[in-house]
Length: 196
Image (cartoon, rainbow, N blue to C red; front, top):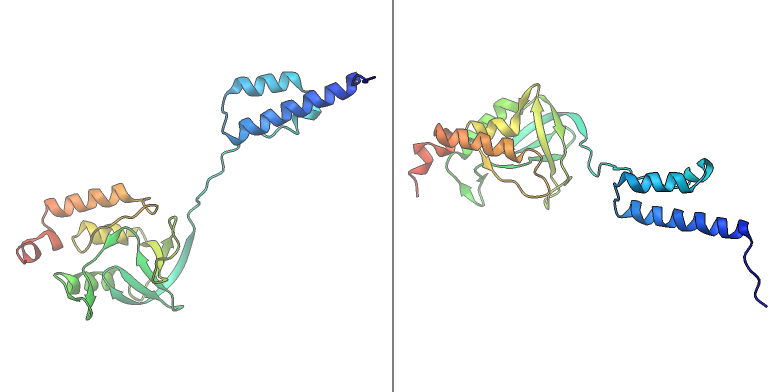
């Protein structure tokens, strides 16, 4: 003969079922307030505390660091006093390497970068990626209120070069490049555009 479950046992099973459904809904992002209302009516207060609520936690939180710049390597790369190398996110300045040969406006971009950051303390902020394949830090850089990445683009010393997932300032950079092109600044001036 099969015994029936007692009332208490069925009540516990019901609570576990509701809690299980709540966990599944939370895991799949249910934001329907009706679900919370139904759960709150079905469970006593002490059991409601066991039901997880949907909490949106940011996946990415930018981190800032103040550091000193030892030297400028080229128009978009610097070396810090602690020996780390840093590549500006979202921009590409003309190369100043012997291997690639000098490209148009590379000396000017390097000189502008020196004026902006060499020997100064900068505030660097990360995006999603921490380092590139060459193990350089990938950062947005400010000197005081000057956003170095943006100013290099706006004044025509670099062009926009964004790669997901590091696209926090993509729209700012695109607007800066549009302005530089319109005003024929730096790279977009006749010095470089007439060379083939």
